[in-house]
Image (cartoon, rainbow, N blue to C red; front, side, top):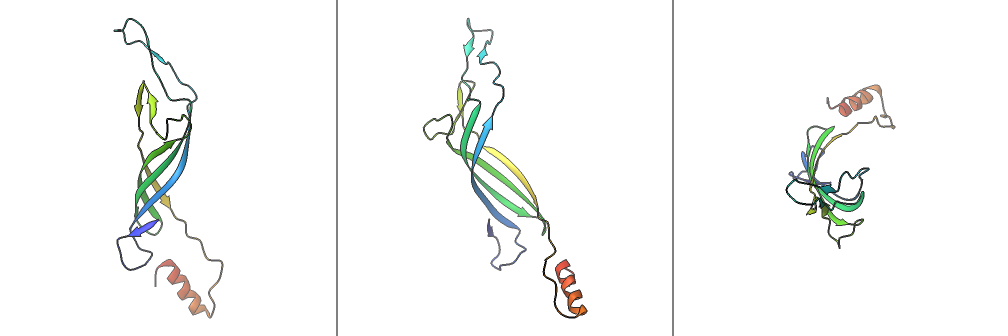
Amino acid sequence: LIYFGKKKIDKARKHFIDNAFGLNFEYRPSSGDTIYNDGFAAYAQPHIFQAPYNLQFHYSLGLGIRFNRAWMMIPTLEIPLIGIHEWNGLNAKWNWFSSQYWPVLFKLKFVKLFERVPKCGAYGDPSEMNFDKKFRSGNF
């Protein structure tokens, strides 16, 4: 995560950049018909589709928005960079209806951060423990 927007370093930053590399494996259990008869041609035309198995190397880039201390939303664009299975020479295009397409994926991620009570306790008298409890809850 790369934070931006404020010079002061604190936990209240509202915007950040989320980027990642990853592998995407897809499996299509049924291929359907590969012969298409449009009614105008004298013969049925075969179509070329992607293989049932597909493995691609992806890159995703998103802009994160923090709503409060716990909730974040990250709209992300993801593009395939290299097609590993169904090799097309470092090309990530898909064969679909005898045409080649380059898929661009849009993701919308929601993230909820759960706060955990620290395992170490506050030291001192009961007034310091109460102050520590108020400080951790944000009511100080």
